[in-house]
Image (cartoon, rainbow, N blue to C red; front, side, top):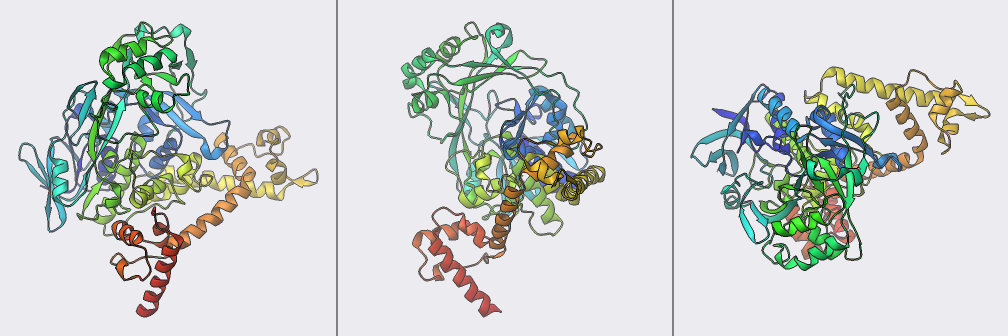
Length: 602
């Protein structure tokens, strides 16, 4: 049987890719090493956070599954950064790991047009520069018009604990062997990255009574725009800290860390450092925060957030027991580091299709990223672009002015990364336009067009924003005490709730609609400025660069510019301007050359 698409890997990227393609009506095959590892959270049992929560809401607006499953399985909900401006408010939920896996696996098994098989893919099949299928370890061959690879940390995975190392894609799971060699043979570059995970402790052996609890929001806010209301008994997390004794133990045993002994060659995440890195690079800090997070309602496993390391097990034990509340804690799982193969993302088009092999798409950690949310976002975008190709349409590309997902993909494809890429709000130029609360306004039209968002949900979203716009217009026209209500509400000390008390508000508005009204009025000046800047960027994005342009013909262009432009193959002047090493002079020469080409062809 020939499928429309084959997706390799059933992690967060593979789930979103396969569901999107199958829900669009195309026969899809999803291959995974183990059914019982579908949607598994390899590390932190949480979804969202700063910038990451924005992406999860964008995934939801586009018709993805991550937010809905989080709402169905979460243990705790929090909106981070409420004391700051609305641009950086960020939803985060503590998830039940086992339930998350069960719910996601159930959705995959029940999805029409989607077939699941257990298999280890060892080779990509290609003909005349085009992907046509895959071959498995047992010699089976599956054929498809498109292939999406979402292998996470499994390609040539190598696990490290002290001076012990062994092949593995995750703890107690075999790696994927051979696939990265197959991709190399097809002309793709492969690099080695590293990440890690902390220990898991037995909740029954922790002294909770002396630790600081961290409670969820009451009432909790759903992740998904399609979740009407949350009915959940929330569990607390708890806070402890490392201390000077902890740091002494780490320093005295650094020579036993494979990271500092030179046994790990992969590049690790700078923004999520191991304990060894924290102690060495932040030696002036007397302590570091450590969060104890439950992994589920039916397990005693506690995730020790902030304590990733690869030290020997006897050293790990001393480190944990040196901390307040953990003096007698028993280990369920040891911390470890893992090295794996991934592919520099500058080899991709914005559609996440590889430049070297047609109809081959890459998504998730295989693209040198970190995080469930970054992976799911890429998986969904790869899936939607497969759908576009199958329907004979143009690539589906989100701009930097439209979504954090657009920033993610553009950063990867244009700038590349020399470490596991993680999304931050600081990476987005238009943060006030890309708030987590307005993702449905920005993106749900696309999810509806693809057929992934129900019409009722889309109409509900449109009605919400029509009501918001109508109320802002009413406030602009209504005067009270020699000023308009809009001008009154713009003052920092005034709030919409006070207008309701004065019988000057619009009673039927929901809490969410009231927030939108306040945000839009109080930040109107900043929003208007960003809208103008976004228009200027869109103008640069419209100045297209032919894919076949010969950069060596542009007189005066620097050698570095020629090399980088030839490698990245930017599709616009805007994208070219974001390539590291491209100077304003290079851009000017490129613009003049394109103008000459335009006059000649015109």
